[in-house]
Length: 457
Image (cartoon, one colour):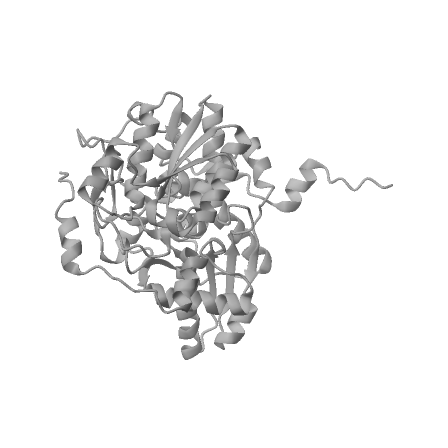
């Protein structure tokens, strides 16, 4: 019988998986502001971050100048399980809307974690293993990041401790069970296992939790347990670096098709998928090689870009992490328990915050019921049940496509379909039963949190 095995090198070339991550900061004229030590308000040094993060990840976090980082061979091999992810033309959605626009989506849900999170999870687990660590701790909102990290840790033989936002822990029990299947321990946050968790529970009895709370607990456990470090699924520079593989693949596919995107849309919580999707396009924009309309879409219940302030703030509710300059609602802001758990973070990536402040991208917010209307339409015509987070991008895409219908413009729209919604059926059930609300914080409520921001000269 003829040998049908594809040689390893040929297989990689055939797949055209990028061999380097792209560091968007290298092309930014205005670099993102540095992380600050909360005690001294001076830029954090590598040695100060070492008790929290892995050594190689710290180097990536602090590097504003290196444009490309080689993807280690072990990570590259892992990527072959699910990359490159498909770039799909949404013909049926275009037809349903009657728009002259071309709509493409980059689908990141074609792996067991069901989302883009695995791109960075495998990188962070790899560097932890390389350093000889026993395990890592983390937080997770909707559960995609926790699922992805549990998979990566299982692959590299690392222990994985996940603090899951309590409302998502209760709403998404099956997501929790996937993490446990891969060997992770999963704790609802805020818990009574940590000093910070007990403090938050005492100050906010019955709280549903937030990503900021869960981060505090995970950091406390990491820094107090020998052989452990903390890893994060969004916000940080290193995460956006790893996620640039999304945009690099998207750009390469569009180039092969002879297409140029006019509008690029992504949901925005902490910034990982949006930052990864737009990276090479924004790089071209920064270098003056091309122009794009880039839109960040966030929940109206947690509107850090559209209603937050650009200031230094704690990355976590317990106020133990470094200060980051970002668009923020206040580190102790606990959003309404909406179903887009991955977008319930009080701040935004420092990279994206700087780009937004420089006027290089736009931001809009969407109500929860409007988002699920868009999700249902997409599911019915395109055959994929989208995650609530991804559906924010779908909502904005539909809006832009309908604008093209009104004007007759034949624009090309690209959005990030970050994951599937098969673990979010409680949310879909509430939407269909008319029990979903659209709580939006008032200006007065946000002013309370804004007044408590740390004072930084």
